Image 1 (cartoon, rainbow, N blue to C red):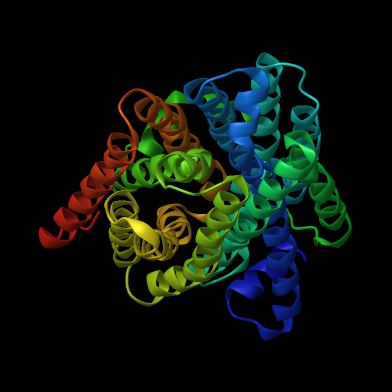
Image 2 (cartoon, helix red, strand yellow):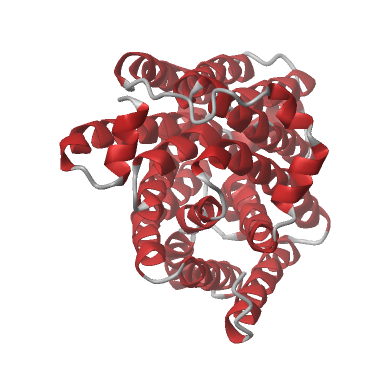
Length: 405
């Protein structure tokens, strides 16, 4: 698929529909595997803690290093994608996922576990910005396409935690984590063999643009970009704390939950999220990005409150369902960012803001883990609910005062 065919697809040319679907299928499949490799880690955190005689906060720090490195690689991957094309970066990200996940499975100590988590974060960090840029160039309704992309990741949250929890209890956490490498390898081969070659969006861009401080500041200081970044930091902080520690929360806070059951519930939440994300993307395309984001924020906060304060099976089920419906913001948030950038800026600009908001949110794992260890889970996830309330306030101010951010 050449650059001209991409332009034709954005104009709605039906002849390119098959190529569009192929791009979406391959890219969403790659997102499924690179995110799934990281989703294998939270369900086996209790087993890692036991083997290495560690604490929740220490393992939370290792996971924070993973997500922090993942965040840092969003920007350079966007710059490189603009210059060399998204396909090469997608392939590098998947191969990095294979190597990093396999290394974690072989980690001889907690220090090595943390170092290999950084390696996984670097590899996986090269995937998502180029993937989002490619889909935004290919599809006119970018909110729906990006919703489908993130739904692939959410679907990974259905499968991987349940499989990881079962394999962890049955064969040990190392076998569970190694599954991530085994599944990511075929996705890398599919990317190499099936993804059409698309001309780079900006092959003339010099790599020194990555350190042009004036240009960087101009992008992130645009009012609408800064506003969206604040929202993205809050929802990403929530996502970090949820993906890293939710199974541990279920085991420690809700009576009668074991590792396998926690993995299944974790997967069920992501199953609902995988259904909700394309819907949220369509809502953002049909109405407004902010409406879709606000609905997601309200449902997520309500889900946490139900899980914290409504006892018994009713609280567990209704809280999980509400939380799953609420975790639907990725497509609308990312589409909102893409709306602010031209085609030539999308890889560079989106990579920059994604690094910014993900790095700012990366401490979510260690902060919530430390609060849970020292004060309890009510304070830990109560802090998350408070941040979501802050995001809702920002959305309401923009709407009520018609700031047009």
